[in-house]
Amino acid sequence: MKPLPIRLRLSLWYFAVFSCAGLVLCVASWFLLRQSLKTIALYEMGERIDDVRNILNAQPPDATLDTLRKQFSDYTTRDDGKWLQILDQNGNWLFRSERMQAIQSTLPLLRQSPNQNQIVEFKYSTPRHSGRSGLALTRTISAHGRLYTVRTGFSQTTALVLLQMFARDLILLAPGLLLLAAIPGYWMSRKALSPIAELAQRARQISTESLDVRLPVSETRDEIYHLSETLNKMLDRIESGVRSIRDFTANAAHELRTPIALIRAEVEVALFSPRSTNEYRESCVNVQKETVRMTGLIESLLMLARTDAGVEPLRFNIVDAAHLVRQVGNKWNASMSQTDLDFRTEVSDLPMSVLCDPLSIQRLLNILLENARRYTPAGGSVTLRATSVNGSVLLEVCDTGIGIPEECLSRIFERFYRADQVRSRELGGSGLGLAIAKWIADQHKATFTVESQIGVGSRFAASIERVATTSLDRDAELATTSL
Image 1: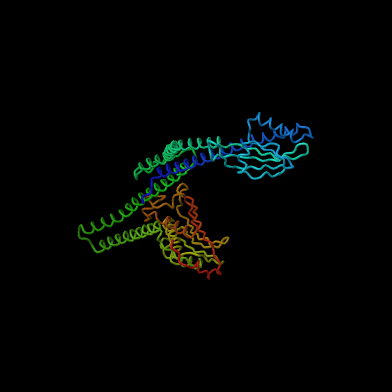
Image 2 (image 1 turned 90 degrees about the vertical axis):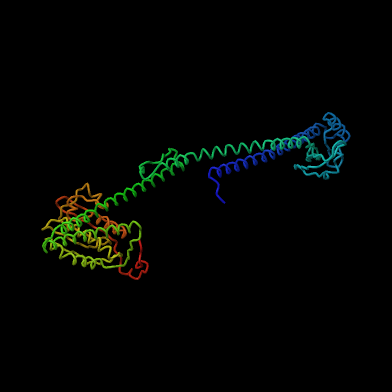
């Protein structure tokens, strides 16, 4: 079954809530009116019993039974013969109206219960009507030290007629109430959803060419405000992602085009005319250099693509950072000597076991050492250092190279960014190494910092939390993790 639109569902909910509220109000009003009419009847009967008490108190204490009967006979004559009967404590009737005698069979026997009210609803008939409803109140009163039981009655016919008329009016008003419930429900749902409809209309106008457009944000700080804020933050992320992809694609194409153009030019020159063996060899060497550079660039691009997709596997194991750093340093000794650089590897004697992916850490150090070799003039020095500091292993690469301008430090980890565009390209840099190094450090939850000064040199450091050797038996930390 196809779900109903939100506007229709809200309208139905408003209609149901208003209808239920109206129904509850009508039923409550009917019962409140009924209770009010009953309260009024009981009040009037209580007033009548108080009149009887006043009459008894007005008589002499030694008044005879006949005197009292005459007094009540005169009272009921003035009071139009209301339902009334009075019994003294000896069981003698002081008064018993004809109307009360007619319904006596439907009422329980009189019982003397001092200070208590006895309320009875009963049915009675008249010569013209049958099945009428009445209400009787019985109370025991005291006068001159004697107890008297008074019972009085009240017809509920008028009250029932009034209740029936009230119920009929409520039923007649019900369709109007339902209509009033439907119209405001639809109006309120439309009013409530109009900001969302506006947001949807503005969102439809946003495309890849207009990602800088943002949705309007209300000042009410309500759910619509939070929705607009969330969507705008999502648009910020989408715009940043699209811009990154565009920049990445453009830069990758540019970086690949340069070596391909050089290879093509070298081959075309070699094929243009016969050349000597040395010239052909020189052309092949140039082509080989460019293919090596292009291969490295493609490998970096593929790694970054895998990291973006979250499929670059890292295999974490507990390893000795000192041994790892010595291995990397040994591989760079010859390369640093060829470029006339003073290269040193300094490793602390303290325990330096870390939980890491050894290949990734080696790649991070190789990237930093490659940059240090590339941007340090001949005669300078490069130091690879591993020390244990405050429960962490600090891996450092320091050089006495050309340095990085201060305004560029915040951007050097961006892909394809070069502080010195011309010189970096001449030296074979692609602008991807530090981005990869930063990603590796982040995957190891390492703190990656850089310090640099123009003409003095640079220092790159990655701080990785050290683990105790007793944790070797922890299978969870030795398990392969895919990030």
